[in-house]
Structures are given as structure tokens and as C-alpha cells.
Length: 143
Image (cartoon, rainbow, N blue to C red; front, side, top):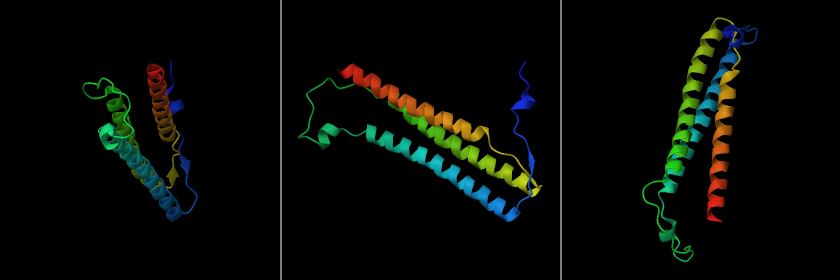
């Protein structure tokens, strides 16, 4: 049986400067916010770029006539959703982490963030793997 107490992150005594620790926590929160906003902006940019008709914009470099795809690209919608979800998740996690850390610092304690950074790393690796897999699959299909 899984012991859930072993998965909890430890709480340490905070023996450093309180002001310095609060400012460091604020910088970390802003980094989470920037990361989340970057994912959201990338998702919006991908969505907008997917709506462009490049054949109209570049009439000289038109590819050979192909059957137009009906409807929207479902894979692209899922990817945009994953980007927006990852960005929103990073912002939500960073905000909750900031306020919980602030409360702990005021009591002279500190809890390191083991799982938040790991979860973001797994999400980014998953997104990158999905993009690579989709590009490789489409490249094989066009050959």
C-alpha cells in the first residue's frame, strides 16, 4: 500500500532574512506567471496562425493543387488547448504556491516545491513530444 506521508514535502525552519525570502518568493511567483503567460501567448499565436490561408498571402509560391481539408484541424485544436491549459495551470500553481509560501515564511517555516516544477517539466516534455510525434507523422504521410 502506498504511504502518502512519504510523498509529502518536508517543512524546514526558515533561518534566513525574512525580507529577502519574501522577495525571492515574489520573484519566483513572477517567473511562474511569465511562464504561464508565455504558454498562453504561444497557444493564441498557434491558433491565429492556423487560421491563415498562406496560399492567398503567397500566390507565387503556391503548392500544387490539393484537396482542401474540410473543417478544422482537430490535432491543432488539442495542441492549442494543451498550451492554454499548461499556461493556466502554471499561473494557478504559481499563485497558490506564492500565497502558501508567504504564510509559511511568516511563521518561520519553508516548504520546497518538489512537485510543481516536476509537473511543469513533465507537461512541457509531453507537449514537445506531441509536437515532434505529430510533425513526424505528417511528414511520413506526405511522402
